[in-house]
Length: 285
Ligand SMILES: [Zn+2]
Ligand SMILES: [Zn+2]
Image (cartoon, rainbow, N blue to C red; front, side, top):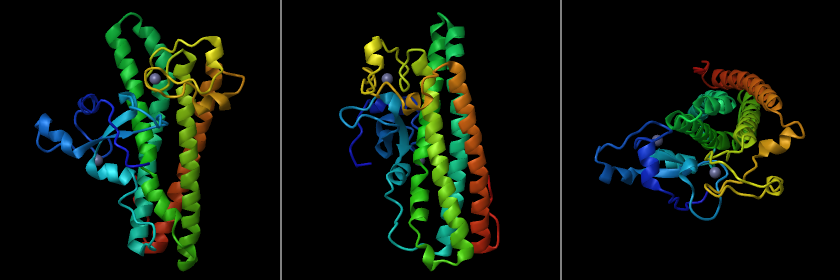
């Protein structure tokens, strides 16, 4: 991530998010909206286009501190962390991935019920708008949660294991591997979930109806005219020839089960690291 300035429609994004950091919940302290936007930023999530303006459906409000942390600015990876830093990193990593797993579970349930929710809403514009806003919101939360992990995972992965007691370095290596696996599984889950709106002719990001011809549908590079996201998510390719809703749901459920097994491994390894470092297990909440 570069320090590129994400314009988009900042005011609309801040208003939508209630002038609150979506990562840590910090609000602007002044309460004066004209002055408050100074310490809030728009942060782009997901595979946003590299050129041009980012659509508001792919922008989240974050505070100064979270913006720096998301960009990895606050973590030095060139020095070997001491025991206390290691302990904190392992604990934070486990907590963040816990948050991410809940966010993905919630997004899965919202995405899979989206077709029914839209059908039930019928001509009721308000109900339809709510269902769409709920999907976009859940998608942003989960992508933001996934992107919050590397600032803790990367420094742990960069630790010089040879300088550590094997009682620490062995479970630490396992912890890093489980955390990486979990990140992959969670990204996969998001892309499976994104195939649900695509299946009913909607953009996977902004949910605008896509009016593509049959030939365009085969074109992976086709981008949504509203938000610029490539029309096809990675999940579409993995789904293969069976693109029925049943196949989607079972892919989502299977990956969710895998992710929950990886989470157990992760929590276990984090406990072992903590015990080796401090003689106490981490608080696994
Ligand atoms: Zn924040
Ligand atoms: Zn779109």
